[in-house]
Image 1: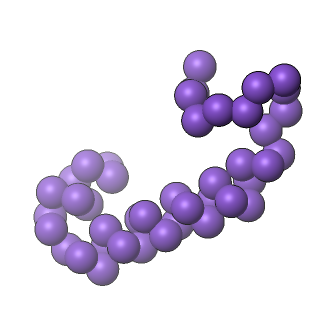
Image 2: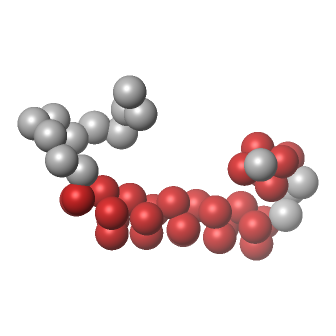
Image 3: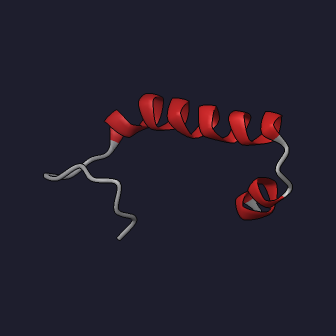
Amino acid sequence: MIMLIFMSFNWWLMISVAVGAGLGHYVWGSRISGSSQSLACH
């Protein structure tokens, strides 16, 4: 779904996805439990 938003070349949607991803990482990224915090999903 995110790929389709970027392929539509709608700048407002691209900016909102990037800002939302950044805010989500800032807010919930610090809550990752475990010894190593990384962006890897596995």
